[in-house]
Every structure is written in structure tokens, then in C-alpha cells.
Length: 299
Figure 1: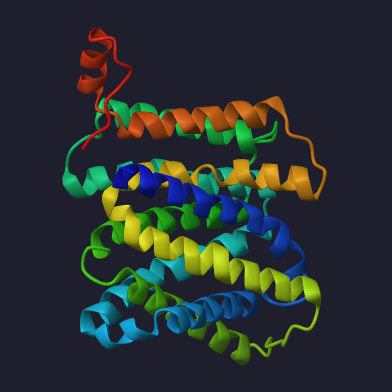
Figure 2: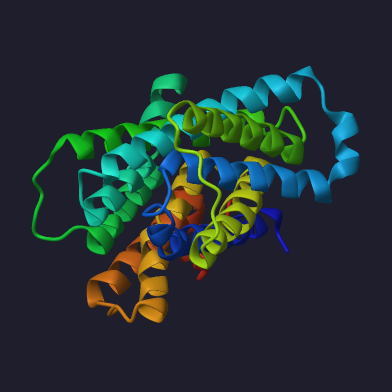
């Protein structure tokens, strides 16, 4: 299998896990603080990777610590800003604004590279943003302080995506993930301790939520991102992550018996079109059409 296609498929699988986390986290954070929950989630993810890839620890060096620590900062503060924001805004608006990282990634890259995005990238971003709108937005478009916090979270996550694209080439993906998870987990558990919010979960739903998010939505997903993102663009990565509200809706359909609407289907198709346009060279597409081909992927 082409490594680029493999990267896209694995990131899609990870995004499915992200979409499923809503069902598991909802009950957990009603019984314990968010920081406490994040502490268990990230520390368990770090422990899992250490147990599986114990032999790799001998390759740990200063660069791993440096780049892992740098990556942990936007990851941590993105989670915190989103969590604060979602206390004051609706899940639908929060989902849409979080997904706007798909817009912020090309904007930040353009500022760094001092050049405008290509036409196909702009088209991909427009399609993905429209898809997000179909998936998440209702009739209300009023903004509040919660939306501002989630907006900040989206910017921070866009920065994280770009940093992963740069730093994943500079170290072992597993060790970079372990370093990030340990730093985020230790900061969260220290904060919980200072606030007097440490809580040892005994409820089945809480334990289930911690295990699922630690194993699939953290250890698997972020390690996959740290390893495979170097094979695709940051913009394609952000568009793939835009599928999260779609997978959340599908999970809610099966677990909570919520309806799948036409808006959900149209939104998913628009985001899928965005992924295609992000990875297609327009000149190759048009030349391919002349030769009765559909499109050609970048090599």
C-alpha cells in the first residue's frame, strides 16, 4: 500500500476513535474534574507505550525531551482551552469552532512561508469548512465567551499539527509521544492535587472512559500522528481531523439512538471531497482528465 494512503487511512481510524470519545467522556467528567480525567488519560497512555516499546527507551536523548516538551505545550493548552470553552457554549458550536483548525493551518503556514496557499488547498479548506458547518451548526450563530476559548483551542491545535509536521522528522515517534503524554499527565495531576480534586475512580463508566481514551484516542492516535504525518501535508491532516463530528454523530446513532440526518451525510461528503482536493495536484488532475483519467496523487 502507498505510504501516503496508509497514513490517511490510519489517521482516519484515529479520528473515528476521537469521535467515539464523546460517549465515554460525558459521564466521566460529571464525576471528576477535567484535569484529573486528563491526568489519568495521558499517564495511562504513556505507561502503555512504555510497556509495549520498553526497548526503545535506550534511544531517549536530549532532542527527544526537547521536541516532546515543545509539542506538549500546545497539546495541553488546546485541551484546557477547549474544556473551559465547552462549559459555556453548545457542543455543536464547540465542534464547529474546534474544527476551524482546518482553516488556521493553511493561514499559519502561509504566514510562515510568506506565500498564499495553492488553489486546490483553498478549495479543500472551503469544502471542509462547509462540511463542518453542515455537521455541527444549527440556526443559532450567536457568540459568547465559551466560543472565544474554543477558538483559542482551535488555533493552538493548528499550531500543534504544524509542529508535529516539523518535529516528527527529528525523533522517534514513540518516544516523542511518551514524552508529551508524561508532561501533560504530570501537569494535570499536579494541578488536580493543588486544587484538591484528586479522585480515584471506582465507577465502571469512568474506568471505561479512561481506558478507552488512553488506549485508542491518545496512545494510538497521537503516536500514529507523530509517525505518519510526515508523509502527508499538515493541511490534509487538519482536514482528516474535520471528520471527528461525523464519527461522533455515527457513534451517537449506534449508542444513543440519535438520528443521522441528511445534513450529516452531506457534511461528511464535503469533508471527504476536501481531503481529495488537498492531496491532488490540479495540473495533474486536468491533464489526467484529458487522457481520460480521473486524477493523479502527488508522489
